[in-house]
Structures are given as structure tokens and as C-alpha cells.
Image 1: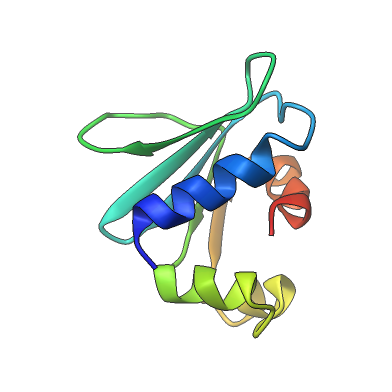
Image 2: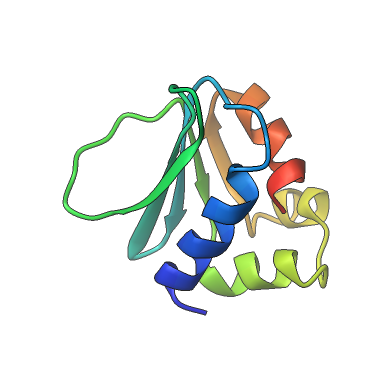
Length: 100
């Protein structure tokens, strides 16, 4: 699964929910994806070479993201085991259920 595939999948899902009201950055080790929910819709983009200060950062590998999408692991267990790390506004992270 490439970052472009992840971004397209997330954009489709993010368009079906209300705007998050904040920014959420997915840090996939070498690549990043930003969900900007500060406008009238959530916008999703691959981020490269930009210094961004999002409201929340979720760090994981693309492999773990794929496992979450396929329901092979549960988000709570991934966080508890350290496979996913969340920094910043936890209220945004709690909205991720709608996106997974």
C-alpha cells in the first residue's frame, strides 16, 4: 500500500464525515498525510517538506495502517502495544474510528 493509495482511501472516508474542526497528521515514518478539517470539508493531502504544526499527530507504519483497515488489529491494542503513538489533541484521535 503506497502513501497515495492511503491518501485516496482516507479522502473518500473523510468526505463522508463532518469536518474535524482541527488538523490531524498521520506520520508513516518517511511519509506524511494531513487531514485538514478546519474548513467546510475535510481535505486530505500528502505532505512533503513542509513544517506543519497539526493539532494531533498519529505515528505508525504503513503496514500497521493496512492491518487496521483490514481489521487484523484493533486500534486500542495497537496503541497499547506501542504500534501507534498519538501526540496532541486526543479528542481528534477519538474521531478516527469513523475513518478506519
